Length: 282
Image (cartoon, rainbow, N blue to C red; front, side, top):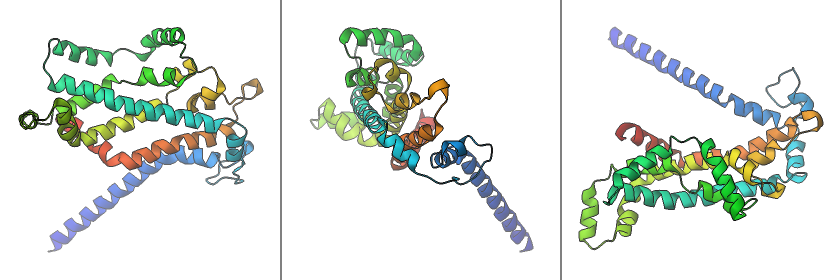
């Protein structure tokens, strides 16, 4: 009995130690966001001061008021939302159909197409930027939503990721549905997609993060201040002499991070499940 009590005590101590370790790791991971949030609520002099305070000193919301009223942050925010939402919708349609064709259909050149999809992930983005930009200029899509959205309307990684997810669904379900009179699109809609919700949720989160935080491409295809996205707009905050106005950058960064946090909290179950399935089965 004494031995059981000792084992239980050791187990409780180990559990407490692990809990403390997890709390410390979480605090360390959240520290940059906490500092950003604190700095967004204090004046510039306090942000650059060598005297660090855990709470805003002094507390002010003037930074948020200034950045929302004196700059085009609401328009940049709207641009980012439009680009991210439309890009995700296009990716869900195009990438899902592509992954379904690569995994479920039989046609000449299928193996070559799979190789091309995998190879497309190896090509650095910087290699394709110049040809894409010249194409946008020729099509007169500079400073347009088309120029911002269509080049990111398809993702080789998501095609490959969804294809791996579709591989886990038995083809016998497709055959049974086709015997019952379902078309290929009906099979995709009623069988493949309902069984791939975690993978689709993961794809949405990943694509949103990529598009929402992208700076390079929007900075190339937007010349008009009103067409800029949030990362590009925030990068324009600069005073004479190259001084960065942190009292404007910090609240802008806080506002830009809110959609990502909300989306992850809403889809975290599917995101974690999708990544886990890919790690175990892929």
